[in-house]
Structures are given as structure tokens and as C-alpha cells.
Image (cartoon, rainbow, N blue to C red):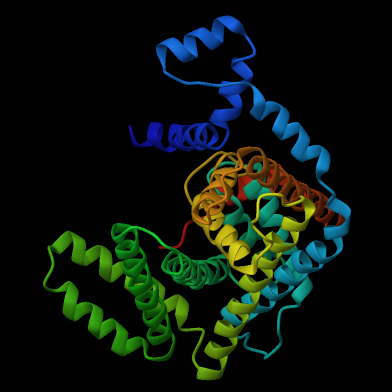
Length: 366
């Protein structure tokens, strides 16, 4: 049963996301057929006039990718350069004092991204540390744990940014309460990471104090998780190293948001919503949260759903523009990841399916 859920859940989530993102387009296309139009209107109460299809074509025809391509590509390159640099700080120091090269880190990361966009179950998260362990003296376990710690810093940043975006909008009290809870949770996660890095023994004692008052099974899970996290965070032993990681996290996500910002200039704006940095942050945050859900390789559907949620949060409801923007943004990033990934495979004389097999057989750290 669990295996079936694991296999089919990504397809279900993708289907729901695609329907939410493109349902209006599907309905309007179906409306071009008189029989289907009658079924949609009479049975489901869906009204469609066919205009969305034409509006989407118009939005694509008005798109001008090249003026925004240069700053977008610069931000894309800078984003992964600083991600590679941050990964170096998250890895244990080597005994001889030498540092792993940024090229090895960058190439491992991009090959992992390629696998994530092609293979199911986010196998790239295993291929990335696997490749680094083949090229350096790091073990697969230590490289994998560094990726896990990286994800926690990213999660704290995304949740805190999401809470800020929600808090800056006029939303219902229930949504505001949710944003406050997210802010508290993300701040708590960040504080936990800081203490786990600098004061691991103190952090472990605090967790044991609270977990001892919980049911045995839950306490065991919490203690195991905390132990794994503390062991991974122990590579950050000095405040200066931690400050560098926090600063690089801010830089990494700033360049991620700028990618969404410059892509806004691809399309003309005709309904009063300007290209804004605040909107680009909202796009980056909500897309990051959406693609975190299990989905088919390549994040089809979930990426577009995240874009639509961000635009609607900022009061923009032009379905055709939202769809065109989300498709172009997703297509450009997909082509970049796949192209760079296959170029690196050729450069290093690697075979992707051999890496897939090796990653599937690699032992998962606790």
C-alpha cells in the first residue's frame, strides 16, 4: 500500500496542480466544440467563451525574451555560483586543510539538478552527493548530510519570506494567523540550526528535556532526527563560518528572486501591476513551496500552480498572462538545467542511467 501511494501520489498532485493552473484553458478549448460546451455548461455549470485560448496566444506573441535574457542568465549563474560556495562551507574541513574546488561542487550540483528534472523521487538529491564523493575524499554520507543541512537553511529562509509576504498583504485574519505561525516556525527552525551549529550539546539536552515528556515512539523519532541534524550541523563549529553560511543563504535567494523579477520584463504589463521586487519574492517563495510537494520529474504543474498563487496573492488575475509567464519561466529554467547537465555528462564521460542505478543502491544516511 505504501509503495502504491509513493508511486501514484506524485501523479495525483501533478494532475491537481495542472488542473488548477490550466483548467480554464482546458474548459475554453473544450467550449469550441458545441457538444462539449453543452456538457460543461449543463452538467458541471462551467461557462467558457473561448477567449482564454486567444488571450494566451496573444500573450505569447507579445513576449520578448531577449531583452531580459542577459540579466536573467547572469542571476542564474550567480545563484549557482554562490550555492556552490555555500556548499563548501557546509562540508567538513578536510584533514590536509585543502578545499574542494568550486567547479567540482558546481558540476555535482548541476548533475544532481539534471537528475531531479528527469528521474522521479528527486533522485538528484542522491546523485549530487554521490558524484562529489567520487571526485573528492568526502564520503557519500558526509556529502549527503551537508545537502540535508543546506535544505534546512533554505526551508527557514523560504518560510520566513513567505510569512513576510503574507503579512505585507491585506488578507483575512485566518491567513494572517497562518503567516504568523509560519514566521514563528521558521524563526524557531533558524534558531535551532544556529544553536545546533554552535552549541550542539546544549541543543541536544534541550530536545531530550522536551521529548522525555512525549510518547515513547514520538520521542524516539525526535531524538533520532535531532541527533542526525546535530551531527550534520557540527561542521559549522565557529561563529564566522555560520555567519558566512547565513550571508550566503541571503545572497543565494536574492539571486533566485531576481530571476523571477527579470522574467517579468519579458511580457508587457497592461493592467496596472508593475514589475516589482516584492512580487518576484512572492513568485520565488510560492514556487519553492509548490515544487516541494511530490510531483512528476520536472515539476510540471506544481511550478505553474506556484506562479498562479503568487500572482493572485498580489491581486493580478489575468489568466492568459499568468499562464504565459509560468510556462516561459519554467521552460527556460528546464532547458538550462537539462542542457547544462548533459554538457557536464559529456565533459566528465558519465552516463546518467549508471548514476541513477548507483544512487538507487546507495545507503541512505539515517
